[in-house]
Length: 198
Image 1: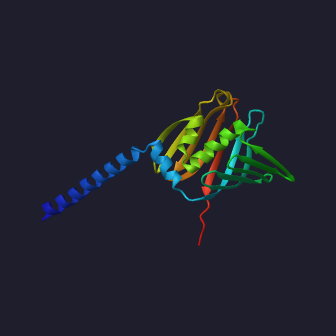
Image 2: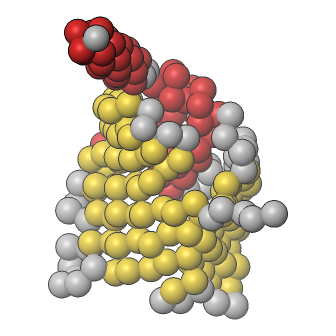
Image 3: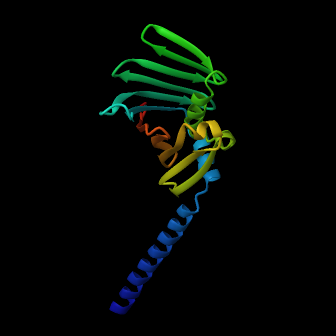
């Protein structure tokens, strides 16, 4: 009787190990294309953010916080609330910046460098692989539970400004964005999804 119970327990343990191995094996096979497909299916998002910018000329980092809004395929809003209200609204090719009582209008063609930064975030949120590959070389680490997408600029002008962008995510949600510039400046943004309750 004890032998039968022992065998059953052993079988259950072995089955659990096999299932875990299969699960881990599946997680490790995540590709950039698979990640983009999952991100592409994500619903319009609303999140809060806290950002720290490290500027070489300053002793202390510059901190800010606010809200992010995204609706596929190309509408992105970054509304900074603290320390001073500021809005960056991107809709298609158009860029609107609001600072205090002043409003500025641009296009991606007017600000190509800023456009590359915007598209790195917007392209990832939309799961737009083609858009990302136009400006970056992509590499992916981790699995769907936690992944890190690294973007290296391929444009020579951008290579003089930007070292890399690292985007960390959990499943189909972006958790953080880190930007490292050639001049030593950097920024790190933590993103927390806002859960809409019915």
